[in-house]
Image (spheres, one colour):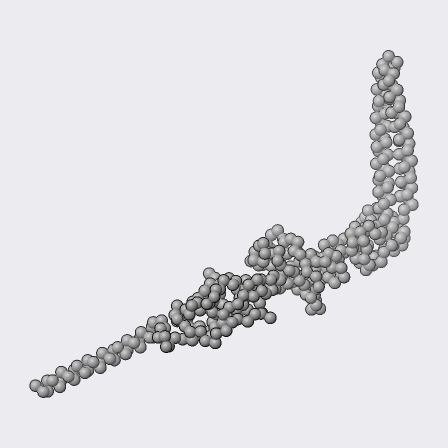
Length: 379
């Protein structure tokens, strides 16, 4: 009987030990395969800062090419020998300035001849008009209808000759005016390939080139996505356009976007943007390359290191501690600034941004903020 009790007691102890071992194994398995939980005394600590909104200027950089708004080859409208060269290569000229003069003798003579013909035509017209008026007053009782008709025909013919003479005088005056090669707009002359006495005509080429320097145009391209983001919004009025010259110097004047190309370049998926700059000192020269900065000032944004922002096709996310609970939050990235992302500030009091790597098993769990600080502003 005593031996049976010992056997039963041994079996009970063995079952109890087995239960303890099974319970320990279950706890170990559960800890390995379930989200992290902890008692209040064991809450994990995460270093975090309180976000602060600030105003910053974000620049987007592109390569641009300088182009003249107006550039033309000066050629004569008429033929003749060069009588005068009134300008020098490399000089600035104003619209209407005389650059060269074609020999005028024959054109002055043609104008005088046209003026004489106009006087004669006017005299014939006056005489024919008076004769016709007399015939009309006399009436068919004094003169025949045929005579009246003849007087009317002579009057109309004289009137036509007068108008023709006026037109010929206008042509002669225009041709004389064309002996002056004038600047069609303000600009800078290039090399002048003219010599006194040289025969030139409308077919002559490369005599002199005139380039408008002020204002001047800079053309650069943005992707179709950037076009929609930066330019095709009401915000584009807040954009500032600045340039960096080839010597590294920042151009001291800002530009204005005049217009964009009317189609996307299918080869590059980009849109050409045309900006205009004042250029009084001629620092910007056609065909030069410059760095273009689209600069926009954002108010009340939060800066975060790039590595703390997770990019997904459905949006961009960061970790936030809200009321002591670790969460993942979708954010709007406005741009880049000093290797950081500028985020739209929709954070509220009581929210903190982790500054260390986050254990994703803690999402939705209570955490303690350590080294609590306030975010510093950008310099």
